[in-house]
Length: 155
Length: 480
Image (cartoon, rainbow over all chains, first blue to last red; front, side, top):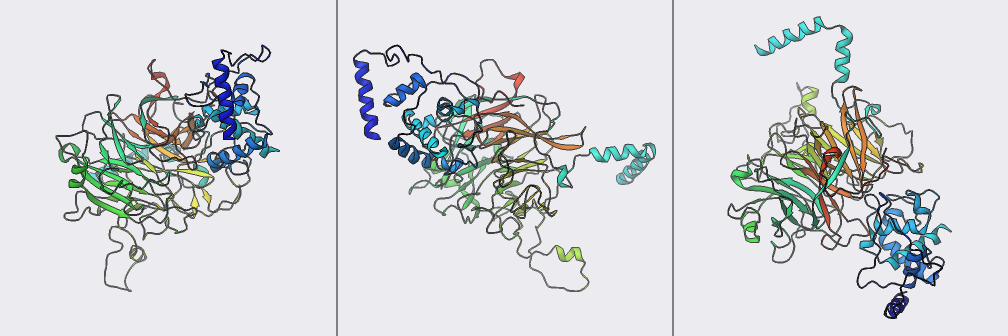
């Protein structure tokens, strides 16, 4: 996983150096996703901080909302590791929920949580109370891996 | 003769009032609930239907967990950082130098055990005569004493009112109380001087879950209690027992006499009881608040798995309340096994309780008005709020309001707002404004009190009074 992050990061830097705007993928998928805070809909700043690599998965996600890591065994394994560290105290190992809500049923606390963009908004930007902004603790690529792992639990 | 004229007056009043009016007056009197159905659950009807907002005062705190003021007219707000520091906010500015830094008073390292998120520095309380004597008290879990609770008094150097140096701290430190801690949770929390001038100390049941020590009901331990001590009357000892404490004399040595003693007199002999105890049967009373307007005491007792409990004592209370833990949590049995348990009446009922998302095992998750850990903030008497106890929830970010509704003759609890904040505690500004602090901390995600993202200090205001340029806490826009 880490190897891929670094490699993809280098690729992104290479594209930047070559002067290609990351957001225009040949004109067909150029629309940028607007991420919004789940509580008040204000736009979320998803610009990557210095030192955080723009992996292919993050780039694609910003552009289209598609999470390339869903179903990717390597990413799901990484997502599991992160989930166990950051999420399961509240959502339990099987994501059935205890202090935090069930993540594998059909009920969503915030309407957009039915999509990966909504999941990302809640994890990255935080929601109410203890669902803090995990963007403070996890990189965006890591958040996509966590989402992929949650999908694997729901299967 | 005053009592006689009162009696005559009461008799005359009774003669003048129709019987039904007397009954109504009795029903509307603010009382502790006598039956479980009188205990408020959200949603509810708070008098005046207050709308509140949280306005940021300052940020950049390392896991802030409490707030206090010195009561010296300086306007300073003292924010307790779990790591072991007390920071000063003066005129809205956070001073760089800590007021007290327990991480640096011991040459071998910090004096504060913060290894678990429920450990650390909990609270600071300034002596009612602080302006004169410079005394203040802190409550924390001690690293050298393996996590035991310490209540320590320090004395400010008048030449250095905003910062107590390590030297000054060591010169003036006086340990008031140490309490053995068996486990690392339910260790808190708040200390505060009551309107009677005595120091009230909240200590949880010592942890694990389900109160394995049975500390709540055990009068022989200070765990699971509110304590009350007299820090001025001890002479050579660090404190005295106030005469009015419910078990002040219960453990005194005495000659045994078996005959001619009434039931009541026998019942007062409790040879293992701790005379410091004011109230018991509590699980994790991390925060409590005196109502600045009338001296009533509210206690937010953090509950286990399914319900959070809010207790109330009128200022006239003589102590000794048994709030039921671990026989009961709120109105519910422990263990709670289902929705319609036949639960025995036991102890003093809370005035309000609010559920977790799953209010009993295998229940359908609730959609609203739930939380997981009650952190009392303070009692508001401004902005259209009257004797309104504000409780922030650590997990859901909700702020609940608890108040007596005289028209209904019942206690009420309602969600006032839901925010993005993890509430950890509260207190008052010098003018009685309720303050709140939030951490960005939790269990598995806890990186330590210094490494967690910083928390902030907030002022609870009536929503209509928020200044235009104020930074307001993010809230859910659809709270009913």
